[in-house]
Image 1 (cartoon, helix red, strand yellow):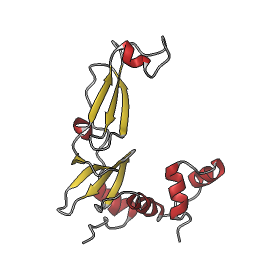
Image 2: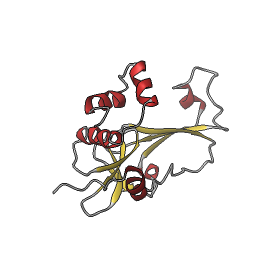
Image 3: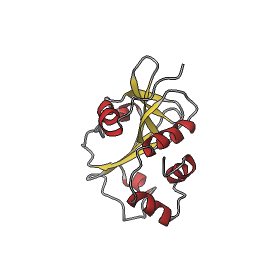
Image 4: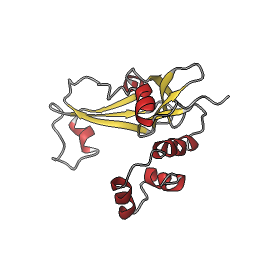
Length: 167
């Protein structure tokens, strides 16, 4: 039996747990059902039916399409690309690369020197949600964060079948 229900996992996602509850959750035995409950809570919160295989980032998920493709998808339903490709290249990107742009978010004289560091903000083209922020040297390439081995995760870690598309 799962130690945590959908309500408690939802509070975890929302950041509304009390510290003692969060500490208990972090230090207690990880019940095997927790990931599935977490996935179900996330699935209940989106308006589309593609099954979430993995949460990928804030507002982002790796989902499985009816044709078997695995893609990165936003809360709003915007579909980026195959999960092995770099979704950031399809996002709206705002680069803070001048003193004026830096001063919009930093106190005057406390921002990075734009010749040494820029801030890249990645936004969803569908809903304009901010998906990620990077502080990098100006010449730094846009890097794919990670490429999870979804099949191994389900087979060897969860010991469960992948979620299937509901017909």
